[in-house]
Length: 594
Image 1 (cartoon, one colour):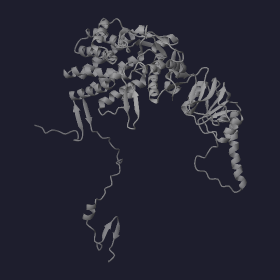
Image 2 (cartoon, one colour):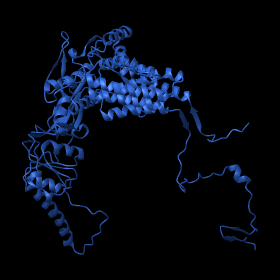
Image 3 (cartoon, helix red, strand yellow):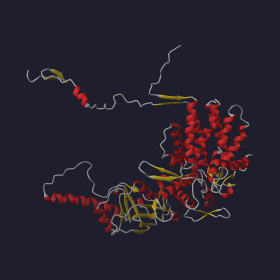
Image 4 (cartoon, helix red, strand yellow):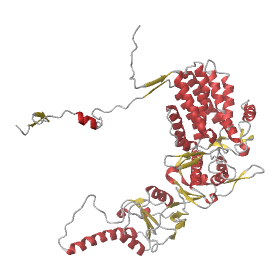
């Protein structure tokens, strides 16, 4: 018999086979169970405490998972799914985790029966293709230019709310809808209330050929100011930022139809890059030096004032002398503005950011703004550049009772704006309330009967896994899950009634088209693809090797740890006699007696 051959070091730990599959599936299910209760409008909230003592209260799947510190590699991979979904489409972060966890859960039975993971993955990929085909079939196209049509897609289930009285305010503020308790219809409460639609419509840019792009991160700023009521939140047709004019007593704080100039250069004497020494031989030389500085700043100001601006904004510093020239000419000035805010102002009022005052042109002046005003909100001053003619950037002003509430409103608003952006880019809707998943599940079950071979059973299991979304919605509503799911499966059994789903607020089985509960096609398709592809990836892992250290580059070894002599070592050390000559480090040590 041959002796065993050791390939891996003793420090490495290796797991393989079905043990790895079961461990990965259990870890993924654990992550899915954490945020399962945060799905739907009747979802629970999670309170997260960080190391610094800060508190986050939220029901946003991605916000919860990114705060978690998990050890298992499969759990880390699941958390990455949520982040990917958030970056790609901005919503569906909870759905994708719940669906991926369920896909892995139903695959566990086949792993126990010694099905090869490749067979399961092949069936899952086939199910994904058919699921996307069903989505295309039941999707409904809307006209994004028609406001009444745009009103439809804001009824998606992406803004998650909790208690009827408290969190419903968030829902109505973001969506701009009031719910009528008698006929269950949704009506637009006010033109300015529909924050998500107004913001994305304002910041949208036409790319030609009917395409439209909305850059939420760059050109839509959310400004949160504690105080007031949620109903006071609004979308400004322009920009606001936390700045006051340089000289409040001398400069105007309110200008109607201002001519705005944006600069990216300092309006002060330029200092040397390195330390500069100047030798002055006469007393007059000092006054010449000061006069040169003053003339330099005066020339800068005259080049700017030549274009008769009403408001000058610079990202860099502004000296007292420049402030004097501007106030004397009746020009208001703001300094040290953020680059991102400056870009938004340029988009809003049509100005061009200039790097050198001597390159200024009349076309660089922004004349699109209707009003510049500095207002005091609470203890701080805010500058408003609003009433712009055709703004391509805007600010969403959020008011609320506390910072925690405002943070949660902002998270939900970001999801709502992402959905609005997706609809603008791809104007297709699918029914919400779990109706889409039930339709996909019913169609896949029908199709599974025509599939031959052992792939039939994993394919059918994938169809059943889609029911996890409506089942979770029913659980979070507090209704009888078994009765509700049986009734829904009965209505969807023949592949018809694609619009029948669960009303997330009441738990009733209703027509989603009548209730106007929709989901974005882009979000739903991305969730299906991400969940199934991630489940296939985790199923194909059959070996985990841990304990691998990073290889260091040759000669990159760190300094060795200094050794500290203990007291006992020093006592036991052999002392060198004085009369003995020894050679150390190339020096001859000779005793004093010799």
